[in-house]
Structure formats: structure tokens, C-alpha cells
Picture 1 (cartoon, one colour):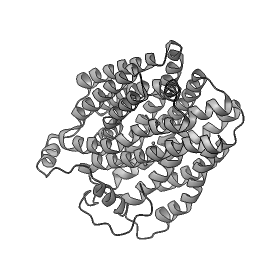
Picture 2 (cartoon, rainbow, N blue to C red; picture 1 turned 90 degrees about the vertical axis):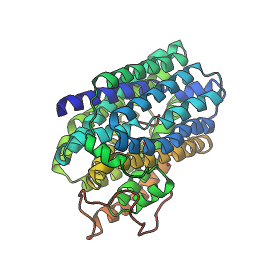
Picture 3 (cartoon, rainbow, N blue to C red; picture 1 turned 30 degrees about the horizontal axis):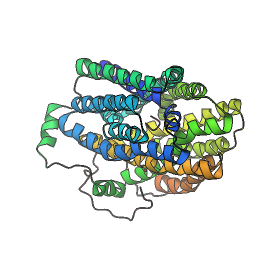
Picture 4 (tube, rainbow, N blue to C red; picture 1 turned 90 degrees about the horizontal axis):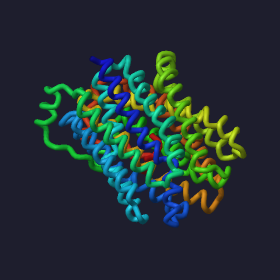
Amino acid sequence: MQKRQLTTIFVVVFIDLLGFGVILPLLPYYAETFGADPTQIGFLVASYAAAQLIGAPMLGRLSDKHGRRPVLLLSIFGQMAGFLILGFAQSMAVLFASRILAGLTGGNISVAQAYITDVTDERSRAKGLGLMGAAFGLGFIFGPALGGSLSGGGFALPSFVAAGFSLLNLMMVALWLPESLAADQRAELASRPAAPFTVGAMVRALGRHRVGPLLQIRFFFGLAFATFQSVFALYALYRLGMSPQETGFVLAYVGLLSVLIQGVAIGRLTAWFSDDGLIMASTVLMAGSMLAWAFVASLPWLLVVLAPLSLAGGVMNTVINSALTKAVRRAEYGGTLGIAASVESSTRVIAPTMGGWLLQVAGTSAPGIFAAAVLFAMAPYAWLRLFGRPDRLPEIHAAPELGTVPVPVALDAALPRPASR
């Protein structure tokens, strides 16, 4: 049964990201047809993330209480509606409305991650999450390439095709995906008082001994990576003169790298190295890659730089989620991954507006320099929190539940990573 469930969730995530990938490279060009400048485009991208900041933890907790399957159905339906509104848009206001709706219901990746943790043990979890990352990558191979090809028929056409993919996904989950959360677990959680996501829940999670440092590292890493993701299409246009089709094919290349990393390499890497070691190595490698990206002057060199960048991103995104689930109880998987998705979404509120503004006022190298500076500054802090405290907790399931632990330390940072939707 586990193999069948993993195969089905793999296909569900692939179709989900296929639809997302279809519109990803085109959204800045679409917004430009309504007269948007880079800063406004940054706000458009950020609106999705701001909505997801609220929606993802709520969906994660709903999935803990009511099951993964119904929440997946709800979120996929919301995505389909968002794509349809995007296709019919005739103004920037409607573009914003479509992205906000999609963001509120777009936290299904954290629910899919929770589904995988339900059907795997700790030993095979990183491999299972890597399989989902491979589905992510495949979606980014075919989605951007297909979206770039479809853009010749107008920017609305890819939106309608993405809505069609969401409808296909909705049918697949309804017909073939069984529930993964046991009935007794749902009954136990249903008997507890409702615990909707609040800022307090985020703060309490950040104060937890093992979970907090992982979420803080995720924030800074996500801030740097989201800066790259959110401005890449405009960077490609302004610095290298690339068309929507060329941008789509470059993103497809990134997707291919992600498949190789998360579908093939991650299992071996997690067998050879600890989670903390991989998190630290990914941070340093991404910092160097971002600095190199800032000074790329040609398409061939861009393709070279994207290889280590994709390696660092693929390893971090898989391993840090695996590490988080090892630090909490089974009943907290959905809520914890939802909060992690919310932390990531918060980076995608800050990064698009910051990246778009930097690109507009300081040039195409500025976003990469900013992202590299964030990571180089964060690396010593990550080392200290992961390796510098002899009393740090082991990765066990005995951590207290979210929302029940007082905050023992002040937060080191204020809280904004599929590629932003």
C-alpha cells in the first residue's frame, strides 16, 4: 500500500506543479501588458505569498484534524478557480485577486508532505520527501517549457491550461488517493479544542528548542532563494534579453536538475551525512552560487551557475522538512509543516518586493548580491545553532505540542520558498 500511496502522491504533486510551472515564467510578462513596473510585479508575486502565509498553516492543521485527502481536494479546487480568474483578467486588480485566492488555498504542498510522513518511517522519510521533490522538479521541467510555448497564443491560454491540470488533479485525488491519517488519530485531534493558526503559534514554534533554529534557518535561506526565484524572469529579460520561451526552457533545465538531485541523489546524501551537516553545506553552497549569479554575463555561464544553486536548494528543502518532522510528535506533522510553509511564504512576501525594488533602482546584480549577503551573514549563526550547543535536543518525537510551550528566548529575526506561485 505504501508504494501505491507514494506513487499516487507523486503524480498529484507533479500535476500540481505542472500547472504552476505553466504560468510561472509568464506572470511578469502578463503583468507588463497592464503597464506594471518591476516593483508592482514584485507586489503581485508577494500577494500570493502573503495569502499563503495565512492559508498554509490553517490547511496543515485542518489536515491533522479532518484528514489529508479532503484538505487536498479543497486546496486544489481553490487553485483551479485562481487559474480561471487569472485567465479572464482584464486589469491588475483582477490579477491580484487571482493570486490571493490561489495563495489562500495553495498550501497543499505542506499537506502532501504531511501525507508522506504518515506513510513512511523516520529512516525512509527523507527519501519519500525527496520523491516529492522529484515530482516538483518534473513539474518544473515540463511546466515552464509548455507555458513558454503556449505564450505565443497569448498569456491567458497558459492560465486556462493550468486550470485544466488542476481539474485533472482534483479528479485523481477524489478517485485514487486514500486517506493516510488513521481514524483514531483524527478522532483524538477532533476531541481537542480548535487551534487555528495565529502569530502566537508561530512565535511558540520559533521558541522550541529544536524546531525554532530549523525554522529560523529556513527563513533566511528562503529569503535568499525567494529573491532569486521572484526576480529571475525580469533578470533574464533585462540582463540577458531572454524571451518568455527562453526563460521557460531555462526553468525547465532547473527542474531537470531538481529531479536528479531530489529523486536520485538525496537518498544517498542522507545515508552518508547527517541532516545538520547537509543543512550547513547547503547554506554555504547557496551563498556562493548567489554571488556568482549576481555577475553572470551570458546564458552559458547562467546554466553553469544554476547547477550548484539547484543542488543547494534541492537538498535544503528536502532535508529541513525531514528534520522538522523528526523533532515533533506524529500528530503535529501537518501543523508543523504548515508553519514551516508559512515561514517560507513570509520570505516570499519580503523577497519579491525587495528584489523587484533592488533590480529597478540598483541594477540586475543587486538581487544576487543581497541574497549572497543574507546567506553569508546567516552561516555562522546556523553553525552555532546546529553544532555549537552541546545541550541541543536529539531528533525525537517527544517534543511538546505546538501551542503549549512558552518562549524561552527572544527571536533573532522577524518573520516572509515550488518556486513562488
